[in-house]
Length: 432
Image (tube, rainbow, N blue to C red; front, side, top):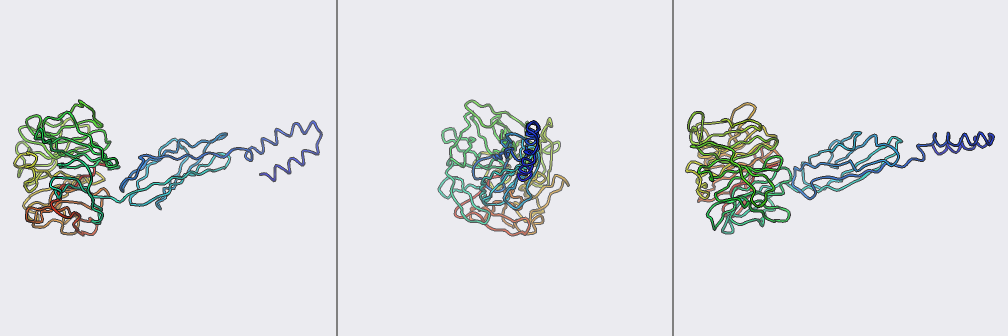
């Protein structure tokens, strides 16, 4: 373009002066692409910080602009080997999920209508996925975490005397749990920021609130409480403040309701109740589901045994009904399957982990589902579907009144112990 413009100028100088004046604006118009400014690429993202894989990041391209033209195309390379995203409208946010631990350089390239380009880059750091669980190795229930290969087990400085931990969906940067109130003798809801380790205590509590679960939009928690004189499912908005009200969701009386678990992809809520179809549940408890938008819950699955909230008697610490327990159902990351505990007679013996398929309406023993032997003659209970989707963590009674956290790889059936030392129970559910 520059050479063509110079040649044009030399030719123009040979014409009459009056013609020269006329040629100048024509020349500038023809060479507009040579004189225009390049676009400016601007890239931002949320959430900020280092989070465990998998983590969904939203990229903001809207700060990109062109001083004297328009941006007509953009390409976003996520830096993890996946196919780059591309488009023409920089005002539309771009989401991408990082599946593995690593440090990734993300590069945005924008192009304007004159063919000029600019780039902007930033760094995304992703940590390894972990299983969070509680252990009494320090004399009281406290929170620990460990990588999926059973390395780097560490204590998390949260509240002391906590049970039923639950991680917030996607970022997993906040941990909800139930804290024992030594003054009142009941369990209260707390939320701990896992970056600063600052804790928040829900003030409007006079009865026990246990088994919290995060709504997938992260603006609400459901939990089990006995404040109505019967164990039911309640909800509270988050973040909460002084005097934040809690709301009763279920009315299963005279039967109880425990162990709520929100779907990771919708507002659907599964919970456990001693109510069955037209009377008591078979074996003592059944899975119920409240589909988002429906006026009432419905029975989902009721086998011949206790389904869902059942454990080897640990529920006594929370004052639960004799046939209730601390185990909570756990959704698969795609929201199509539910892992749960059951003592049905056709298992491996005692308590086993089962998988309920929402599409087929059938349940399968975890051994058959994984191709391994995670379920044994001992008690296995309280499953947690690892956020990567390819493994399930659970608790096993290892004898002598002790419990440990294990993990089964769903593609190989490989089982390994994750926790060490003293009792370790209740792996925290992912609540993307």
